[in-house]
Length: 132
Length: 175
Image 1 (cartoon, rainbow over the protein chains, first blue to last red):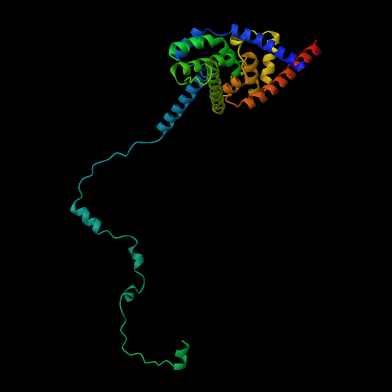
Image 2: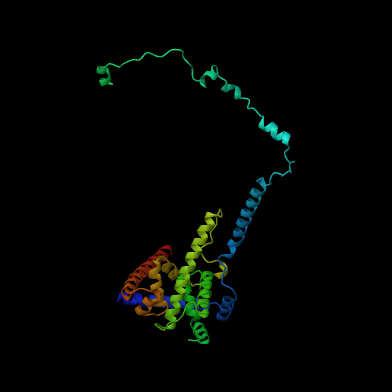
């Protein structure tokens, strides 16, 4: 019984709500006209200035950083052809550290000494050679 | 159905569709109008095609429901993105004065009660009591089984009655 009464009451209240909202419905033709003209953007419209500002900010930062970087190439100068004298100079160039190679007894290291005697023969003992 | 017939049907169902769009948008009028526009566009340009498996009204309500869900999702992503991008503002969920509907005190209480239900229960209650739909039609609109629709219906009815009773008691207590 109570459930039936609840049901009836809910129905009545929903009916009232329906009447109120039906009265407030927008005009069909106007809604259809605006629908076919453009897609609704009402909710996104307030955000448009923020999006534009963000885009401008990004562009400004990019331009600023782009200007700050030195992108100019060094100027190329045409040089005169090298003369024979200059080439000779280059060929005769000695490194200033060359003297470090002239160590004492440097000449000896490049030759084999000649001894005037023969070295005595030496026979290795057998017992020792086994150990080796 | 050709374009002309669809338009006639849309016009016939327009007030009722508005009520359903309001329910899908938690009674936010401007959002509901946007959703209706999008849904009408989908129907008229053929992106949503009526396959005659249900009545036109049931199918249209399904289109409106999906459009509202899609719109809400996009709006949430958009809002989150705005918050992320140094904009500390959110549009109010409450409808502004320019789009408020002049509800009676009783209807206002009912709307508040509906909004306190789970989304699914409020949808089922709206379709059952506001649009006089059968459980089968409700299931078709919401894309759920009839059994599930029945469960949401009985729970929604209990919860709504309880919420309204509490609201009534509160009012009597205040008086």
